[in-house]
Image (cartoon, rainbow, N blue to C red; front, side, top):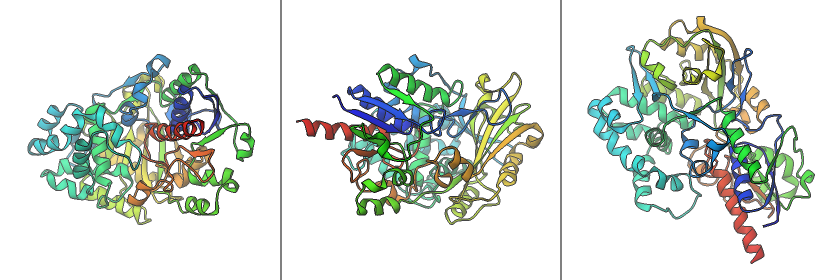
Length: 473
């Protein structure tokens, strides 16, 4: 194929779309507004010299388990995964922590009487992740490649997290499951909240929750380097204010949410399509703090030092109450906090003997509430003396995040609300296509949705290639 394709936005989905199109022989250029490619997958100097902080995402189970990314020679372009001994720790108020271990046999022993139920739920999907990942991260709608496995996943995962935890007897197991489900940004009594918990747990057992050596930027840089090896180019510091700037392109794919797409291309779309894009709903946002630390976080439960990711929120009931408040537009006094401590396992992130960490909690979309005190109270709850270890901090509220990455509308890191209707019709029933035949959308606002896996871009690129083949046949 000899068509010229322009990709607006260099997030993982934009780069994924560019790679697939370049593999097919198209001339591809990625155009990025910021000075550094990657969108939310960037590593920046946010606090003190020598401390490297991941701006957005930091831990990558879906990238490691992505059917696309795992098929690319990213290691040849500098990507190296680091696995902490345990993927996840969830401390409790009794001074202990429940761990999510990668090995299912270890997990069964760890969970005691809940171990057999956990393994029955997870094992079929863990053992067949390489096959089922194409369906779990597939287009919607599509005929499953592995219908029986998908039927098991649907039966097990589609109910709410609140329903699924009735399988477990121990509060520790329920608390662990709640933290996994909270990644959905849904209330834990909503449909699909259980699916996110299942997806997080299955990937932990199947591929782990790794971090890239050197930070999130290493993943972006490897994708850019591989694209360059295919003949593609990445142009930074080049904000696209109108698609008229790309008039020489035969087709355009936008790694943008509907808000940005309307801003630069609204005049090209039909009135009906513009109305549908305008109705796209964004989900809750995040309030994030990056830390430069004098020493490691002083966890009461020492087992927390085995994991790059730590969930702070206590019991299932407490986490469920916190997430329900956010979904209803309120700010919880004791928010669920997701914390990452990469420098424990990757010494490139901080000066010798020093450390980095970041933490965020969920807030209503566009919130301007200062949550720093409540967030740090949750850390202190499980790591007394934490504040005394802080050398510097950088607070990023939803408006700050959106200013640094326009796709993070109101602090939403998922590209849109994840309730059932928006899950099935993201951002409209057209999914990747628009009302203008040469313009496509390839962001997390399309199926399969949020997460660093590149599959939104992969499917958008194949939709483009399918249409190009039909035109030339």
